[in-house]
Length: 404
Ligand SMILES: Cc1ncc(COP(=O)(O)O)c(C=O)c1O
Ligand SMILES: [Zn+2]
Image (cartoon, rainbow, N blue to C red; front, side, top):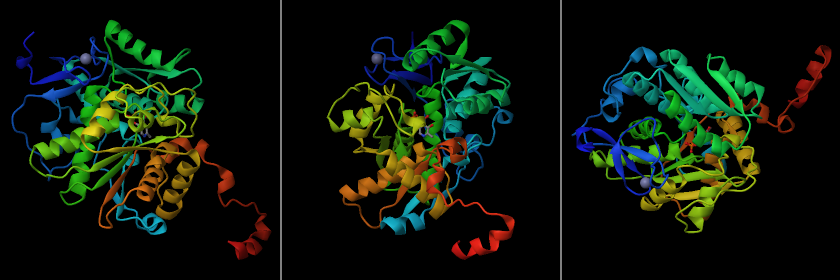
């Protein structure tokens, strides 16, 4: 097949095999590594002064047409300075990119928004995903908005709240017994058979959407990338997209700089950190994952090898943080900055503190923490013993105010 006929095509991140893009075949049949999307399109331009993800960055997205009514207002999230947290820990200028402010409360929306546009573009009537949380709600919401039939496969022990949060959008939810990794692979196989595009965590079109976060960070910081970006890593799709975004900025000549990417995992499930530190080029499955940061506890990350390669190529760093450090960071962000994020997202602050304790960091270096998801989705994980909660009768309230 003549791949030159296609402006966008897949390249295998493992063996380099090139093939026309196919949303139903997103892993290489030769080496089983994920494909990434590359483009032959000539020069493209950013439209910084326009509003909305698609108008601003549309030329960098793999779409022949766009259906604005199918979007929910993706992107354009705030970048806020974290002065109080920086003061407490003696850190250089620190910012939070608030992906928790996306339409369904997580960064997943950037990827889903682009993939759903592609589904409409290709006339695919049904989409799906395998997820226990953020990606399920995101896919179900955008699927509903676009009028696509949506299937969400979850683990059998997924909490009723998480099922409701995605099911409310009208998606068909299926609780599946069995191994989660096997379910991921099975979903792709069944999707191919039944014409349902399973836009899972490392889908190449999803990753294209994540690129736009890097574009926005560059723009938010007055057209310059920060020196450091901290991001939680699980399957590896999000970080792959962020790296791609900064590569694009460099390639288009907008900047010479490339931020030092710091990928953070929970110590209780850190297969990529272990492989990175051990100098390995492949991932060993992490046995018995146990962490409060459920959203990032993938023991066998499908883009793990790709992350190892890309992080080494760009001088990135991988670090792991304990649940105690994660919970402290979550409380700091909430009580000092007014930002309530998920434990998975709080790993960024915990990871950055850890990194600065063991590496020299210039006092003028800027660091952006990607706050990937809203804490409102994981209220059940907050330890109320660590909060200031008292009970009082109405007529004793006055005396209680002495101690507040
Ligand atoms: C809140 C949150 N942060 C970070 C991640 C990690 O993203 P990825 O799996 O693409 O590495 C996830 C994944 O589900 C997540 O839900
Ligand atoms: Zn391959």
